[in-house]
Length: 347
Image (cartoon, rainbow, N blue to C red; front, side, top):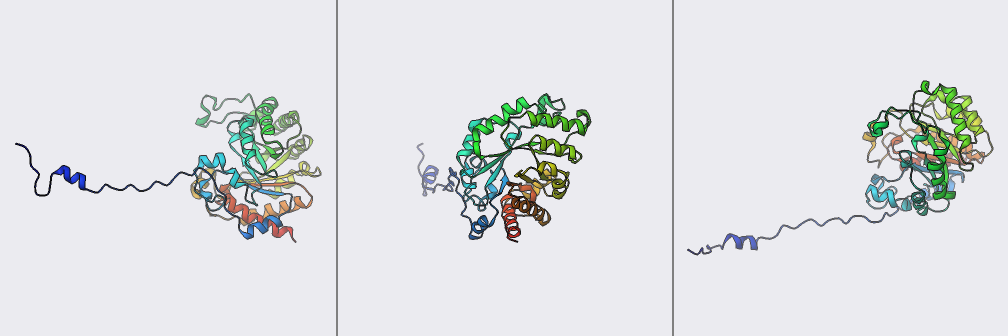
């Protein structure tokens, strides 16, 4: 028997007549990164800061900075590749740290791509590959078969010149502010103690190509000695003053590295890295997505401002790099720091 349609039609008819479920329109993916327009107050601040002072952040690829640095929502990968065009348009962000080079060297072409995105008066602080400064590879799983093993590249000036200095100088040119060698916290006994480390560091710095600014950032406070400062001064390198729980206060670092700061025009480099109540993991969890100031640290801000003004008054170049984990949002910390420096400068 041939089936007949019922009073209300067949099931197939019902399927045809039922309205199709409408899909929500997809938000188009961002393909460009736009800059936030600075406020009138920020523009005024940029004119009131000492000309020798450059403020910036530790890297730039943070989607949470939408509405602070970036005008539109953009994914991290796009910000990493193209965000510097927008970042460097802000009048209070005149420098930035390149952190990815700590984990692996990058070619000069990549540096050149970064340099192309920023104006001529913008500057970069480049972290050197960690292989230069580790006596022994850490036991972290990411080091694979090397973990816990001696590092044959420790203080190897030839490797540093080839893998760190040459690509940065060639790619960034005059936009290279400084090359930073971060000395990870490590046991000193296998190296031979603090004196042996300082001697090794002095020989390393003395053998590097002349011309670029070289900075050393310590993570062992016991290394901050007069011999360390003298070694830097003799090699024409500088101490990076860093805000970390394991290091002395900034004023003490400034005092103990005085001989390295004695040369006329010697730069002052400060990295405001971490709030004193957190380690990196807890700060990441507490502050992400880095869109607001969560734990303001007025004491550290004041110390940085006073050191920056003292150095600027002596016509020393000043670079301050701020991390998101210092207070919760690096650019917002920079804006408040700029205000504090400008107020101190006019006194």
